[in-house]
Amino acid sequence: MVFPYWLPYHPHKWWIRTWNVYLPMGYLYAIRFKAEENDLILSLRECPFPPLRRATLERCYDLIVKEDNNTDYQTLGPVSKMMNVVVRTLVDGRESVAYKRHMERCRDFMWFAGEGNTRQSSN
Image (tube, rainbow, N blue to C red; front, top):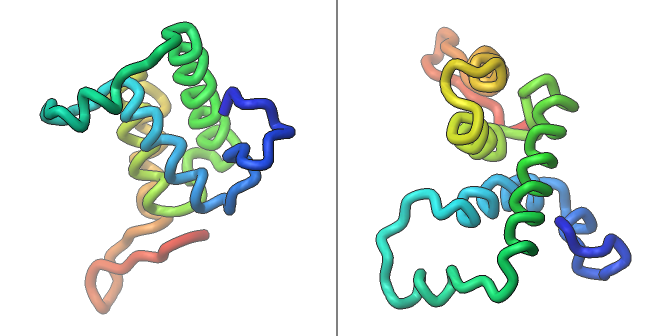
């Protein structure tokens, strides 16, 4: 997300459902959220320029927060919502306004009806 926008492969030029899911996934990877280390994972974690890594993390988190604010914590769909919940919980905590608002908005995608547990894939 810190790439210049003029690059043809800039993530904001991808289909919104794609980058909206990969944004929180990228953030979780970048902070090393839970993974057993093996040779492959260790090789993927090498970063030749730590300041770029920090700038990328800050940009990713900023975009996650903006998505939450722009959609009143609903996000684009249930997959990106749950990924944003994980990121916001890790960064802001379970007592934060962000976590509480996300939990309130879960009912937008999942609810109980006469047929049982019901969900929709996007709003």
